[in-house]
Length: 484
Image (cartoon, rainbow, N blue to C red; front, side, top):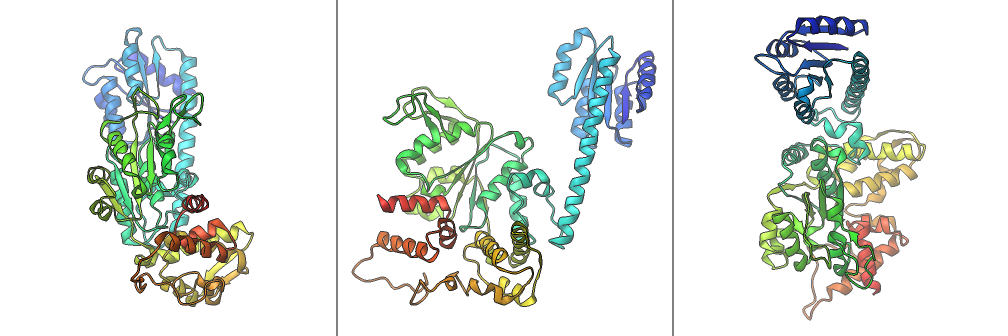
């Protein structure tokens, strides 16, 4: 390691320099904080060891300047006297790696140096892997430069953000906006977009953009997939004996589970008016009552929400509170549909089919020009989710190697209607649908659509949900309602 030693006492500098050099490290010494920081900004160091009491600039001030400079990721160890323990604790809060008390124990110093060396080696390895990963993404997936490094890292891949790939300028703007909103946890963010565009993915990105997010929870709750009478208990939890079927010990809700992190409210437009009032109070006061409870509980959560509806229209119709809408809408991100970002279609298709082929032990080479044109010309009403499912099917059914246009014939022109002959008659077009003058049973119509969609997909709920452009949990909620 290369170590910067800062101490105003020449005897200590000389003794420590010799000892550290015997352990195999390079040492640069400075006799005060100002000279030490000047050395720090002009050459790389893995570790800074500094006395806490020095003229001109003390060790705490030097620590602050080093941590605020963001010049290099060096660790800092503070040397203190017996009377400076409180200052040493303050140093740890400011980001110091550790502290040593005078008179120095060289064995303790040797242990700290070894640990710092291990940490430096791990950091270097991580940066090398990250660099290699970035190069691979750039070469194999997209020739355009992608500015965000965070979502490419191995850590974000582990938390489900590896599907966040784009080339289009529209998605670049979405990512940049997500990064900006992530800087303030007190700003609620509303993510709008059609079903399947990846609203939860953007919500996760906002969460994980935040420094230290890897130790904070991300808790998602679907406002449309939980029965209204159960939703309050699911969100706020309940105390013992709150209702007949309540747990004897009580139960914490999703908002308590998200404390210190992020609460993601998907399909926020489905929230009933009574719950809208209670959610508004949480946003404004950061407090809530568990079901059946009489004691308020404080909570510190970042609130993100998403909808595939126009909440402005819901407000005008009296289905959604105006005050809650304005509170959720402090930060707003609109994800464009896949049909409006053609350059992303082919990139995502390559990513999804390569992963699908790998899953089934197959080899994927490329799409033919005709197949590529077919992918780009399709409107993808189900957006990224539909494209992903199509590539999964393609990876399972298509032989190794090249994908031809004929292999994509199951997509059809607008919907996956060529998969089966179960639908007969004309394609249902929402723009040309003629309603009967005597009235229309919307619930019965929706039930029949769900039944027919299940029949087409042999009662496979995952494929049926994808076909309808809804989540599997929402579909299960609708089926449960139909059977009751």
